[in-house]
Image 1: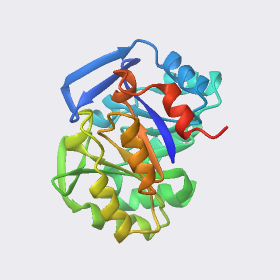
Image 2: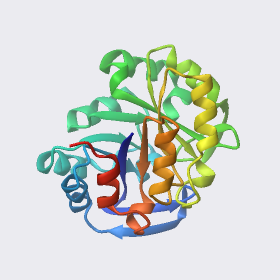
Image 3: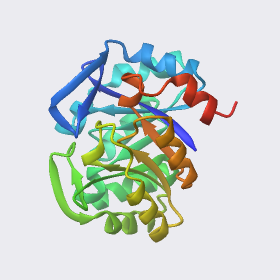
Length: 241
C-alpha cells in the first residue's frame, strides 16, 4: 500500500482541521518546505498537498510552496484545493503538480471536468469523494450535494478515472480510525478503481488493516503531526526502497 503524508496549508503554515471545520484549526509547522523535506528524508515518494483556503474560496493560494517543493525535492505532488476550472488545472500542472485532486468540479461542472481529463489524461487526475451522510460534500466540505458516492464514481469511471481519494468527513482529523467499511463496500461495487483512504488514521495498526483489505493507498496527516505514528515506523512497514 502507498502511504502518502499530507500537508494541509493555510498562509504557509502546516495545519489540520477537525471535521473540515475552519474554526477548529491546529498549527503544526511554520515551514511547508521543511515538512516536505522531512517526508522525503524518510523515503516517501508522494505527498498530498491541500490548499485549504483554495478549497474554500476557489482561488489558488500556494503557488510559492509548490514551486519550492519541486525545486528542492524529488517528491511527487498530488494537489487538491480550489481547482474550479480548466485554467486552474493547467496552472497547477505548469507549476509542477504531478496529479491534481478534483472534488467540486465533477459535481458542479462536469463538462469542464471532462475537458481537463481529455487534455491532461485520466492518469493525472484523482477524484476526491468527500462523503457526508452518504452524499458528496463540495466547496471545502461547506456544501452537501445530492449526489451519492456511487453515482459520482460511476460518472467518473466512464471517462477513465481510476484513482479516488475517499474521505468520510465525520472521521477526518479525529484519529478515530479510517472508514474501512465504506472502502470495503465501494471496492466490492467498483473493483476496478484504486481507493486512496483519507481521514481517521490513528496509528500503524489502522494502516496495516487498510493494507490487509487491499486498499491502494492512504493519506496520513494528523497522526503524524501529533506523534501517534512515527515516520520511521511507516517507512519500515510501507516504503519499498
